[in-house]
Length: 103
Image (cartoon, rainbow, N blue to C red; front, side, top):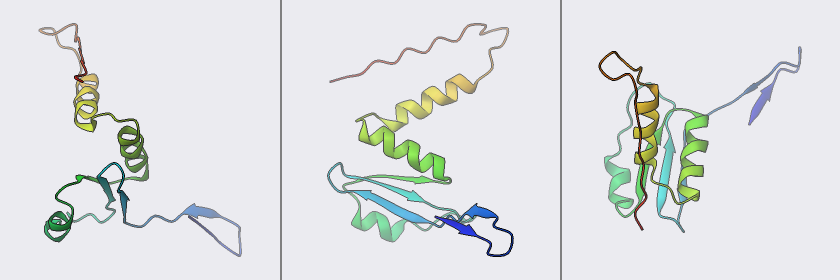
């Protein structure tokens, strides 16, 4: 959603916290925009059979939805992203990441 100034025409995105739930795939992604951490105790009671993730941006929300829609494990992808951000050192000049999928 976007908000547009009626005087100058400037347009900016308007973001708000939301809960995305995919009942068919049993996952929930919570877009939480507040700087304070959310209190998830109440939500976890009702969603204990779901994969539950909290994200802090619109792009992270899109990414998680795409990951789950494609049947991938977001935890593995987060580890791969972490390893790719690591800078090689003299002790580890070459970083090799091997990901295998189990059926």
